[in-house]
Image (cartoon, rainbow, N blue to C red; front, side, top):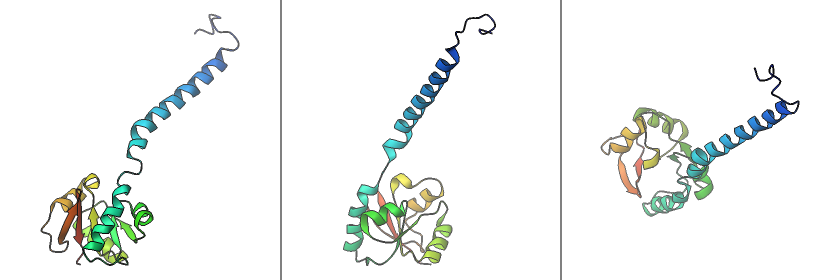
Length: 143
């Protein structure tokens, strides 16, 4: 409508194009700052303390564990790890059986949905509760 009224100069489309690209870049930066950066690397700093706790409890370094972030756990501790599946205790036992995980580590921040029920149930005979460290709970996996 503005073009029909001759309100635009020939450079107007280029100005709008750069303006839209700038607005998209600004929105992307805000979303990254709000959603991605605060949680980046969340929890990995606690993994060495958890590893020391496991070794103090007599768990051998070669025994794999299930954690929320297996690559981060391996990089911070050198221990093999598999991911905690988003599911109930039965799905965790199935994954542990398939990949040979001996211990389940559930962080309070990662306990959501069906994982939360496993985190809160300290009486499951297939997942005996061993203890906790800073809100992170450790269970032995017994199929």
